[in-house]
Length: 314
Figure 1 (cartoon, one colour):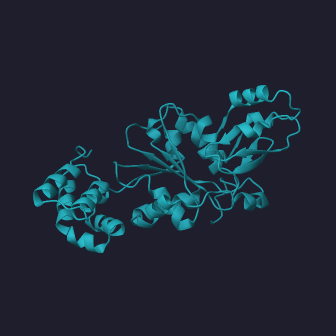
Figure 2 (cartoon, rainbow, N blue to C red):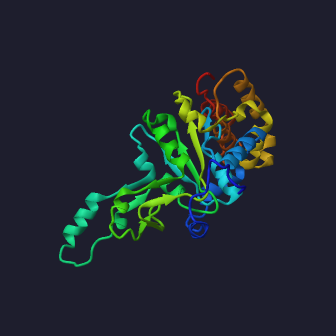
Figure 3 (cartoon, rainbow, N blue to C red):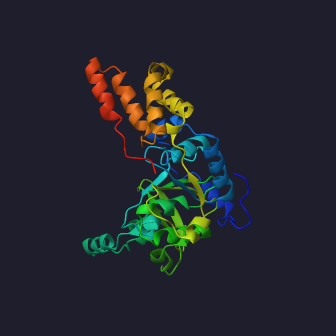
């Protein structure tokens, strides 16, 4: 990674970051498949590089099926950042959910069940970091984090998130209250690995690469927008060359050639203002031109059913 801008300093000790760099899950088969088949264009590459260089979150808007969510897999695959962390946002999501969870009831029950033991239960045993909390652990290489459909969030959540990401640090009060301030092991997101936190304070070394997706269903406050890099995801259905590259990457060059007329018809519909998605086209080609045997009449009916318009473009 190039050096960060002066206003985005690395906070954690480099030696600690080297140890933390190993605490990440390897890319899953699904992420590898998405990463290897993703077809970007110059505009997408420019904005991704800018977000990496400036250490800014990338806010992506666009229609369904345009590749907003799978972009994170492509970047994680290309830069070998490990399995992307994912946080699907709902109307009930809070900043605390993103950072960590503390099972106070579980600890109380464990104390009750083990009341005759002289061993004091570690608070860290009942804390699990959230996706953002894990992404901000000190590391030499950035972690990849997808915050999906942030426009579904409560009105205050976007600014709350950006304040933490801007500072590159957060703390866990349940750990900072411990008198001896000793290092405590907690579970990373998903509970698969343990990480060591001292005094309840987490300082980033390398800022995470954050992609936030939005369907454009709401406007965001100006303080939030100024801290992000914004990009509208180009619709592959409007670009015949990119759409054919997507079909080739997923289904092979022969199926792409066999489906040329279908692709051209699909693009023509999109250019007339019909809202379509690339995965509809992939499903249609796979079924109609795959091993599944269909009569000509069934092929026609299935093509119509699988490529129904999703509405009018805005």
